Image 1 (cartoon, rainbow, N blue to C red):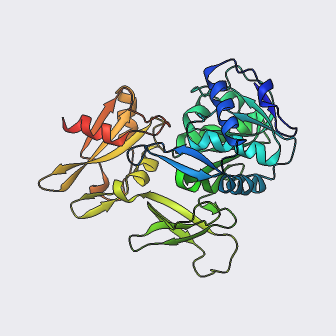
Image 2 (cartoon, rainbow, N blue to C red):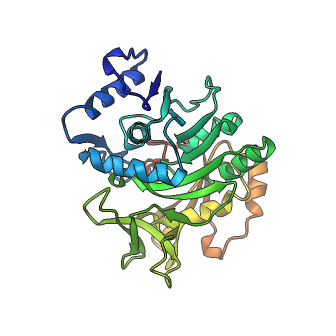
Length: 350
C-alpha cells in the first residue's frame, strides 16, 4: 500500500489487502475524525501496558520536531514498518501527514525490507529489524532506530555496511517513550558516531536527586516527566546553549548492588560486546554475602570460542566480573522487541 499525503487522500478509495493495512486505515479514520484525541498503548517495557488519550495537536508537534531535525520536505518518501498499535507506528503516519510524505506501508515483520527494494528518504525501525535489513540499509537516506538500545555490535555492522556500499545514509539512535510521543532526542550512529543524544527543539532536560533524567516538553506532554534513566548531562556550564545533550548510563531500577558497589549493567554490556557479538544481559541475583550476585546471560549456544573471548575481557574491578555466566538459546522479548529482563531473572531463580 502506498499513501501520498502530499495530496488529499480519500479514505473510501483505499483497499487494504492485509490485516496490517486495515489497522493503518483504521488509524487514519480515527485521525481524520472530529475527535481531538487519539488512543495510544504503551509497550509495557517498564510496567503493565496501558492505554491513554493523546491530543492530536501534540502528536503533530512531535512530528514537526522530528521532520525539522531531519530536514524532511513535502513529497519526500517514507517507509512504515512498525506496528500501529504503539506510538512508534502511529507517529510514522502522523509525520507523513504533517510533512506531506509519500508513504509505503509494509508488514511490520522482523525483516521488513525483505521484499522492498525502493530508495526512500526516511524510515524508523527497531534494532532487530535493522539487524535483518543490513543489506538494504543503503536504500534509506535517514534511518532512526528506537524501541531498544542499539548494541555496539549492531553499530559496528551498520558502519561497515555503509562504508562498503558508499551509502549516503544518516543513521540515528533515538531516546523517548510513549509519554513523550516517540523520541525527544537523537544520537547519530553514522556517518558520525556520537556519544551524546541531542535534545529536540522546545524540550528541556535536568537531573533529579538520583541522577535520573527529568523531561519538560509542554508541546508534547503537559506534565513534568521523571524517568528512571540515569544520564550524564553535557555542557552544564552553558545553560543558555541551544544544543542540550546527554549520555544514557542505564536504568535506575536495573542498577545492581554487589558487595556495596553500584553496577550499571548496560555499561558492562557494552564492554562485553566489544569482544562478542551475542546479545548479553547482566542481572543481579539475591545473595546473602554480596547482597546481589552479578550474573552474565548470553543469547546463543555455548562455545569454546565465546569462552575464550570472554576470558580476554578486562573489567573495571574484580567486583564487576560476573560470578556466573549463563547461556540462553533465545532471550524472551516484549512485543516491541526489548528483552524481557523480568522473565530472564525469573528463569534464573526458579
